[in-house]
Length: 413
Image (cartoon, rainbow, N blue to C red; front, side, top):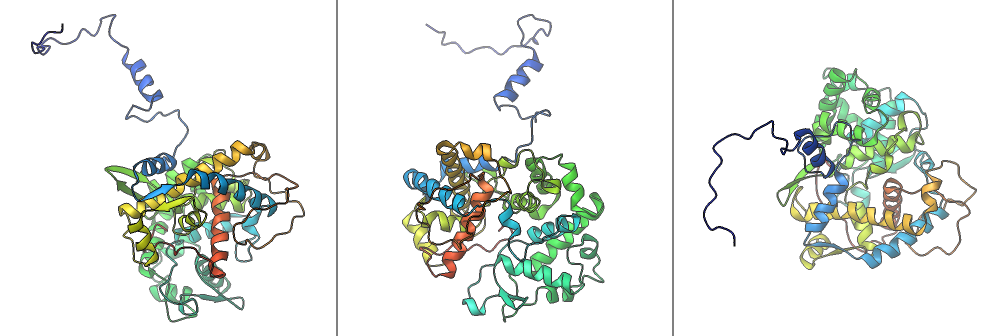
């Protein structure tokens, strides 16, 4: 039987020349291989850790759960509808407000757009909420931001130029209020925070990247994950991180959608060429959880569901808010995996920008589509997110929402 005597501490140092001693370099390599090392593996490809952190949130969530049955059913419905509607990177450029040029000016536009792409929900009625009047139409939500930028450029205001943002004698608060002037009495939410984002980002770009976000893209060496990491390390206002059950988790909504918009706009070429684009996850905001709940994929505890239905605010970084965002990322990943499992041809198809002559319908309520697609289009978390967002916005316009979206006022989304 083992001795019950306490083990005496070793007083003599280990013999470093012993043949029985493990090679420290070999030990470190083994630790890196199994993910146990605190040291980064310099030869390893970049990882954002967003998906890994989202799984951790899901595994430890109490008030947000997944229905695997509904998730599998939703995967098939989403795939069939996306195939029927020829959903691909080309869909991004089809909207009249998105830039059509494929050059560095478009890179500047997309960076500015996603730098300010947060918090558009309103407590006012539709006709009273913040809106931008442009090209004879009123634009709300995300499109109000895009319209405001396009309108400013039409007026000769260099709103997408970092040198302008840091020139406080020209880019005054008065000028910025003019850029974001509303067609209603409600001004753009978090105006001061948007000004701060412009100033901070302008300072970083001008001092560290030669005044152009294109130089950031070059530094990432065609890696989507590398660019996300570069963005979040360089710009505080993109560092969408929080602590959940004692662990720091990365959600990186705006940094990821910035990379995704570049990829979609440039059809995976030039400034949008990334060799690991599938490392980008869904963009954790308030619309996709709403859509996933509508599909039956997400389930909420009664207290959380009552809170959301009562349209009470959720504090940024609170347990409920992180569970909603993290579980949504993991849910879309499971949807993507289920589609790839049932339809392995989507991987071979890639994300082609060559479209067949398929009717481009307005997304309706998510119902099964009976027609077989004539062509297979690639699918990843980015395209699934874009599709679910567009569909949810259509349901909102039709007043066909099953549940309100959760309400968190934050610069992160």
